[in-house]
Length: 473
Ligand code: GLU
Image (tube, rainbow, N blue to C red; front, side):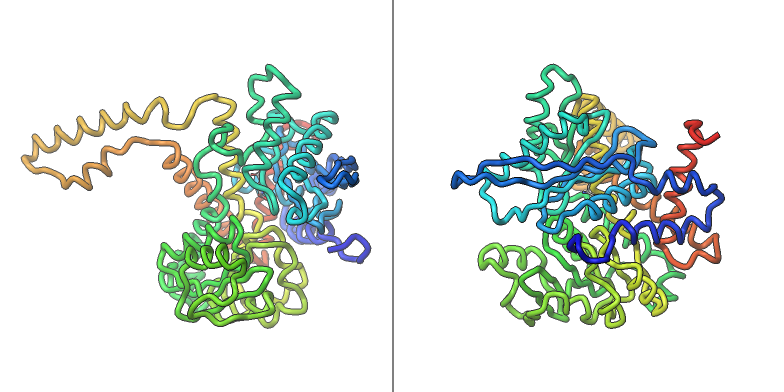
């Protein structure tokens, strides 16, 4: 959204916050402190482009909450970036981290550029200069503020950030922990790339395993056979789609900015991805119907809709036409508060962004811990556990006189390596967070929807933490 319209994304987040705050016991002052953005850094810096022209780049880093250190949140590259949007996204990070018990304050960064319009060399210069600006103002560091990927950024940009930071801060022993989402060779952790999509899947699966909730929606329990539409085939949308597909769901629709495709019989996410890669467009996928207007795909027949691109795609205008019974918010803020009201009145179940897409930051937390401990997960215990399991198994075979099959042997012996630990840590986190939000929702009869329940959980955790710090006696 552009800055000169009346619309405020941060205003929307505050509205949802206020709606939930009524269900908590905290006094007005504490609530105001939680809601406010603690620090906003707006910068402009010049970068020389490949053709010799100098462009002035507009960028932001917002630290929403210092109730825990460091602050944490991604950096997005998008032409629509503005201060209001970064403030809203930084606030969502605070609440998200609180719900999944990741001990960070919320932050977000944004650079107002369309990355498709720049060469790799120009993007590198912009990213490195942005990092230097953050260093100058102490807005980055393993103990202060730790960025990560977001819309329009990925491992490559994170590698530039860590390289710039460690160059400017030689000898800082925990320097690698200044940013997460790095390539493995630069201190990244296995499992970060698929983390958000996988977390979305775990969260939706947990909701779908609740008999009462599914009965109310007129759906059968479980993911098997559910019809799913995914909007956005970027990192989050692609991986969510893959996990739903692997669990037996049918991916009936996929939308991207150039258009959408629909096939009621289901499509293979990987094949669609390859098709887009080779033809440059999602359209004309064999067996699927083309939908020229990308947003129209959101309104097609399905059980579960996964908006995994940008904010506000479901608004007052189209909310009434959404047919999905469940919407899993993989993107940040895909539904406006007005649309939320319409969907709730219709009985659509919205699983809110605020914890559903927390898989990314959860695994970022694991990456940061790995950087601070300077050791890969599983390095110490993997071999030990395998030897022990092998010994236990042999003893059982001797005592029982029977042998397990080779595939079972392999499974039982397998010691914890990094990817298994990260995936199981993520699964545990998403299941517990989803249950906590659902229990809060169930236990307060007046809480109207799951988003409000999620805010209540977040507010209670952040407020408790402030109270325990003694800031509010
Ligand atoms: N950008 C992601 C988010 O919005 C990840 C943030 C992080 O890993 O710090 O949650």
